[in-house]
Amino acid sequence: MPQLLAPAASQAHAALGAAVAQAPGGSVLCVDDNPLNTLLLQEYFRLRGFGPVRTAASIAQAMALARDDPPRAILLDLNLADGSGLELLAQLRADPATRRVPVAIVSGSTDEADLRAAMALGAQAWWPKPLDLSVLDEQLDTLL
Image (cartoon, rainbow, N blue to C red; front, side, top):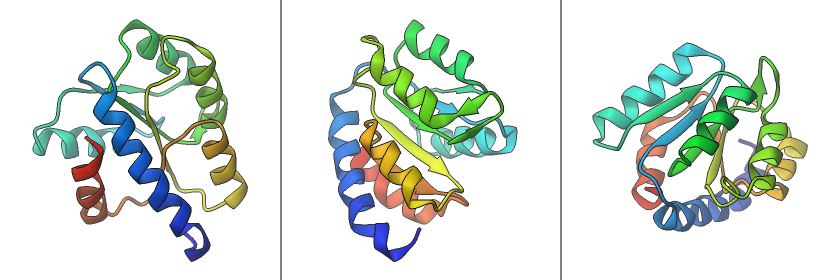
């Protein structure tokens, strides 16, 4: 992440932690069309004793899972096979069932415009890929 974005990202991480603490449900929904990324996150959460991690590879699948049983938090890639993660984030925020679910963007994009758009749509955090698991450990202590 460019140094310029670090203060905004730190504030967003704190906001996500507060939102996750108040969120219903117990699962985490990981939305990424790369099976290796979802496997990494599933295993990461399992090893740390967190609740179940559900996965979705598309916007439609993610919306169906999120509406059916709103998760405690959503980890969202911006580049999905069937569209942009920003489109999904807008849909999540427009739906009363998912409007308040905390969302962390997990993306390889370093585009400042993407970051601003995600935050404007209500994302609470931005975690760049490749994920630094030691940093994620520190941030998850305050998030979940």
